[in-house]
Image (cartoon, rainbow, N blue to C red; front, top):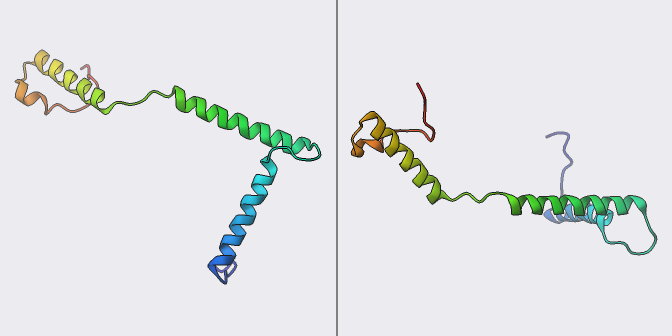
Length: 101
């Protein structure tokens, strides 16, 4: 904590954060004026990353809690029937997979 600079006010913190954000945005702004290969590469990389992230979100399977609960209950009942456990006690079986002994 002794190494950290002392901040006089909240306004200085906000100004510092804004300056950092503006510098980051400058690197990826759309092209205006002269062509800058480094800025172009940064923008392309940023857009490709966003595109890949969106595709992953779109393709990711949506989990359905109701479906999972029904699958667990179905497994509990199957195992209970195989082992001769009464239906009332089947809900006491734990786990989401069948363990083979």
